[in-house]
Length: 352
Image (cartoon, rainbow, N blue to C red):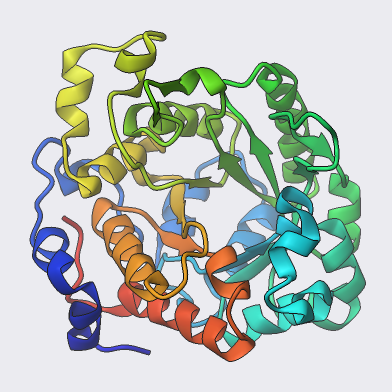
């Protein structure tokens, strides 16, 4: 683990901007920050069953971030989403399902999220050692031309039978196929809760029309935040969303409902953008975890630490990294996850 001085050193020129920023448009008192009491304070008075609450406690109570309210989940479904050869060619050991689970264990993650095939093959040995989250649907890349759709690869029943604590799913909000994805995921999440499993939703806006004059607004603060609000409406217990890269997507694309008051809340700093995402996640009652981003190479440690600080100070509950990790050696992947966990364990990095 890294101490505060080491984290500041890695942030370099970015440190001043992200460590001293204050969110004034949406003050921290307006949101529920992650805490050791998150599961009880949010879900004890909800419609979630005792078994769902038990599984949420297990997820939040595992690994280096246990009982902090923060989450470190190792997600690997890129063998389907981005193709196995492309994803694992740097480290062929990750073609082996056990490597994925062992890395999550070694890195002290709260859980591991992967495909039915990966988790089903390893469940007998590892499901009791680390929480499993089965990803139910995927966008496979072997269909030509490429489409923005998510196809069901697994059932909730299969996830329950292999010993998972929860299920995950993706919806491409804004895509022509999103209507059927919303219906399918809503039904799957309802079944998951009936069976006592927690639910995680990957909320990704996706539509070629969100690209305007060469700028892609699929990760805009306003558009991603509304996707989050749709996701929590489906009773996702945890939301996964990309860090915003810009703002004003609805204005530029010229669709949906927007006004100046809304943009006054969003602000202009990356931490403000995450704070607005958290606000749309039922004001932080549903934990927001942001993506760690693509593998870039030499600057990945800086980018991961920077993203974690932005997420934490905005009110998010963690960073979820796959590609930045499995493109490194096993040991370096573990070190990167632990470096990010250091941000969430650092008492000097507080809510903005």
